[in-house]
Image 1 (cartoon, rainbow, N blue to C red):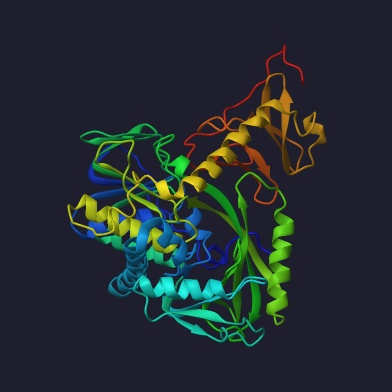
Image 2: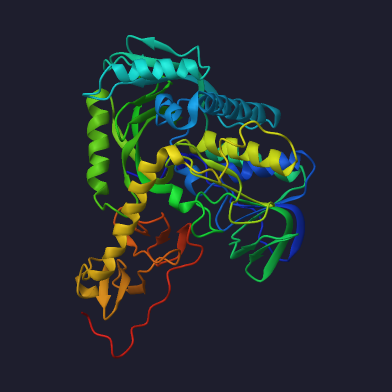
Length: 508
């Protein structure tokens, strides 16, 4: 079983060129995922000079960890969205997600991108024990949002199990995200854009021009787009309005054609999501779910086992589990992404975050919206997705998430998980208290010990070991670091601090 996404197994993320000098450009995009690359493509297409920087390959962050649904059914339901944003807000959300799918389809066609784009129907069915009224409420809300072609059906078109009543969302979509991003990269470069990988944005200063510090070099830009999944350019402006969750996915091998090519979701919390991807002579049945707050659970093996059991109970034709992977999603307190001018900066710095489990459509919406703002075009979605919005109607969720964050700081006053590195199994990590400090200690398979401060450099929360992903995860705002303490996911923008213990420090 491979611990990687089926997308990266089929197509490796492409690289750009190294940044070897300082430069000036109209637009600097930080982050080569779906939001950043869409923004770059659209402004380059409009004649603007653009530079994209990413510290890894193109699409190698959360864009390759997606389950690759292109859905306009909102993860948190339209009837819940309507409570917070009103009927008009729900209509705009439905319109924007449908427009995102259409834009991906149009770009794929216009640029000749062979990314397996296909229109497929989506089906929402009841989780075990859920009430049929959930579907009726969602059907009525979807119709009020302008989705009048959504219909209730007796069952989803699975032959191996009876889903019971469901809602059909016609004409959704699916594609191969890495192949699409590779095609976008080629199109950006054809339009004069430049893509730099292995280029970490150390600092972002708004101004005229804005300046992005990348190692020894500086990119001066009239506009900067921060599309790093979680913003790395502010400390509080957005992070208190969203929360990080890990989600898990398995890829089960089934005979070609045994599972229909549709999207499907149940109404559970957390919910299960399903789609099919051709793979060699077989299909890969992609099934995800089992979400939890990042850094607040270390039972991933059990979660994968529950996903497999749920899958085999409904699809007994599964041959084996070929892939498994996990990804982090940012859940906003009012269910919609934050896309637009960053509230903590001047008007020429833009941000996209808060994909709420719908990263591919939300990210495309972000690229469409931000490129319109840069180009001076009106966009009817701007207010709905404004990062400065105050989610007053979601005050309860806001308070709950931030109380959860506050509780994490109690970790400062507890003991270590082990007393010494010798107690840590090879290939694992644990927190050790040494005097007044807590250390994130990793012991390699060969027995080498790596110590870092356990303090997340974003806002000082203590990281926790993720034994399956082999990462250090921050339970407060979602920063993630590899086993050696190198940052791989914001909002932290630097590594865990090196930690050499002082001579007078002793374990508490």
